Image (tube, rainbow, N blue to C red; front, side, top):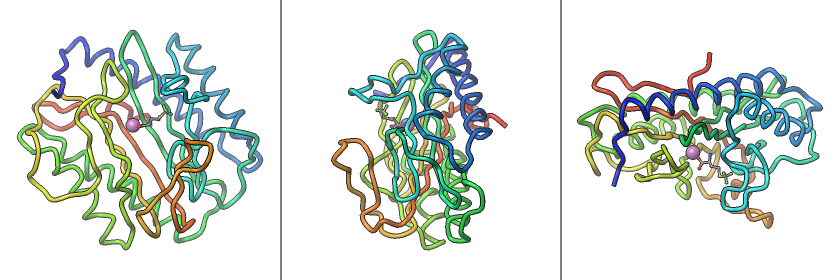
Amino acid sequence: MINIRTGREIDLIRQSSRILAGALRLAASRIAPGVITADLDEEIGAYIRAQGAIPAFKGYNGYPANTCISIDEQVVHGIPGQRALQSGEIVSVDVGVLWNGYCSDAARTFRVDVISAEKERLLTYTKQSLYKGIDQAREGNRLSDIGHAVQSHVEAAGFSVVRDLVGHGIGQAMHEEPQIPNYGPPHQGPRLKAGMVFAIEPMINAGTWRVRTLPDQWTVVTEDGKPSAHFEHTVVITKGDPEILTEGD
Ligand code: MF3
Ligand code: CO
């Protein structure tokens, strides 16, 4: 069942999302060569708690940190640690916030200093594909229209869509129905309705779409070691244009 949220619930998810947008703004201001990812994680966690909210990833299925920080060939779920960011890397920061019982989820991939033209292109197309997907999150469309828009956009540029991980409904739980693949044919699946709240999150690889999980049981990496990018927003479907709740700047 896909939850239809009341106005009051959407307001709480909106508030949760606003705190999350602030956390990602903080991340953006901190990303630089030499930054230790565990320190960035701590700072983001402290920021969220200072707003009276809870970092929602910590403890989720035993996840050990406040955020997921994934560098270069790491696709998602990188665990912050003693690694220092280096010039030329791309780093995705994925954050979840729990606020008065309601969740939000968003991620951005940042450049550390100057990056290669190929990574620049990967970031551009991945971010664009998120907005193409969001633009399909409209009452009357069907669920698979979202993933189809993402896939068409990035494959035309020669990039590939991760299959093993998907976007999701979100609300009182971080992951609710439906699953939202970033690929597939158009016009399939349930019809979208105002009040549905989705976390849309293309994970796009420069090379093969195939991924594997490191022995730490969390970090997902590309099979070919080529870079991957990830952008995510929490979005509510309305009677009109989709509202991006986690948009921060
Ligand atoms: N942001 C991830 C997602 O959208 C959730 C991270 S998993 C966690 O699925 F365990 F780290 F919380
Ligand atoms: Co998510």
